Length: 204
Image 1: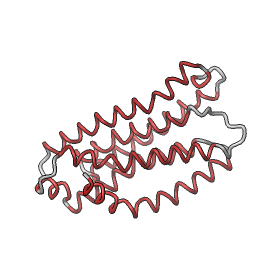
Image 2: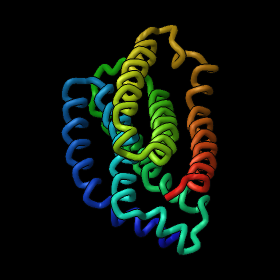
Image 3: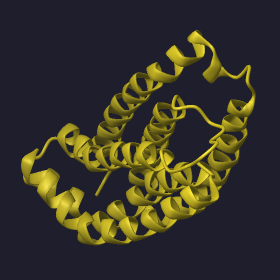
């Protein structure tokens, strides 16, 4: 697994330099404008686009074929595709919490952060097996549609937090918010196992 993660990181370093620049710009804009939606936007952007770029590199280098022929198990190969993007989503969630301290009169409660993280995990869980199943090139159109639906849905969902009687104002709502990362982690685990089955059954 260590070797798989090193390979994944070497592939990802150039991508994350651009993500860092984009994230910095959006975090500053969000903090200045007092709009937390920018924080969620960069999270969704990374969770949707990172798998596309990473798997496109793999397809170009025929990485899965080489790894499987070298004796790597489909399960390890599948899990290696999740570790770095999940870590990136966690870091973005932490940075969002820090950025929110610079927003005065913010409408959304702190319970927004774990839900944002959970949404990122779910998006990754959808994107990674989709890209591996159909390839980065063929999956782009479907991904654009999913990304638009996800962003519109997230905007509508978080709009409910501006209501004083919203989920963030109740004890049950707060508990639900903090349990959401656990649910998101469970979705990731299920997606990784599904991805392993796809890799095992696919002809490379």
